[in-house]
Image (cartoon, rainbow, N blue to C red; front, side, top):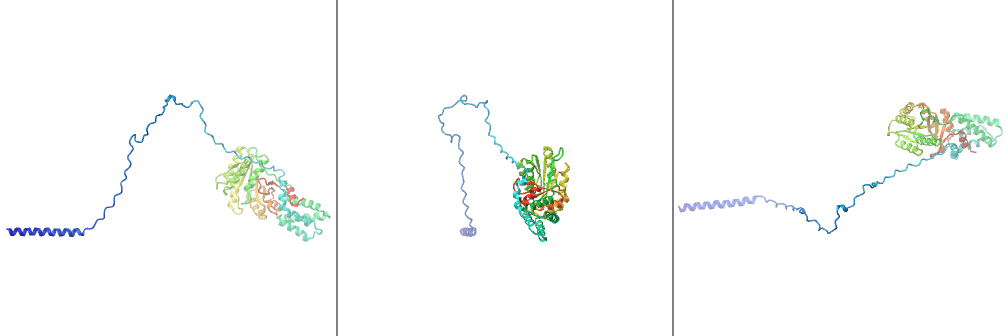
Length: 402
């Protein structure tokens, strides 16, 4: 019995020992876990102040009753807020009178055209007017853009008169040349810009021309000419292809008190022209000036559109004037432009700009011959009042001097 107990006890001790050893081995194979991250510090919001904690110690002050507090006088007028003053309208300019304007600008014209007149007088004053001299006279006239046919006509008349005259004093030659040049310029042309209109409609003037001739500026200066003569004017900004054209025309109008009718950029020019005449009728204006877009005479579509503007405007009544603006410095090329415009619209008058900047004043004669219509206005500078009615006598005097 004792032996059996001893054996059992030994077995139990052996099992306990095996279990302890296995636990140690398994425990050694387990991975070590990383230490837990440090916990974020906890921010404790400040405690809400309790009632009365922040109150100041009450001060001992004299208290007023409601009866002692003054109330505003209900009958007193309320103080008005200051009203901003409207900006003053710019003072209107007083354009220079048009009567005799070309005479006043004669010195400016003479400076550019002096070579033509002096050259002709010098050649005609030679003792022997042989064929070579007459050829030089022809060359002088052609160089001044007088044109072939007018030049031949003038030389033939001068030859005949010099032969009949016999003796030739400087004063006689000057008088002879002056008479022949005035004859060539067409003294019988009616050079008045027609702006009368009908009984209930204003006079309507349409200004046309290619890009760069000074068309918009000429329209603005013409408004000044009309205002100086006591006429009221409405401007139609039908040049919708050039962004600054309407602004430029409006500025010209504001200087003399003329209103400008305009539309959106790229709008229909014919519609704006129609509205301008409509406004002119409503306001009882004397004249409506319509500035059209600068057309390249080689662009058939644009030229057709110019014809459309004319037809739409004529729904109110006939156009009184269609003025073609030409740059005098372009010389004979201006004649090509003139022919094409004359085919599209009935040109009634010509405005020659930049005549003070060229020695080719003979273009006046050439363009009149080409179109059969008169030069009515000439531009002699950048000044606001440098647009003058064309006067053949004053023009020739500027060419040949005193």
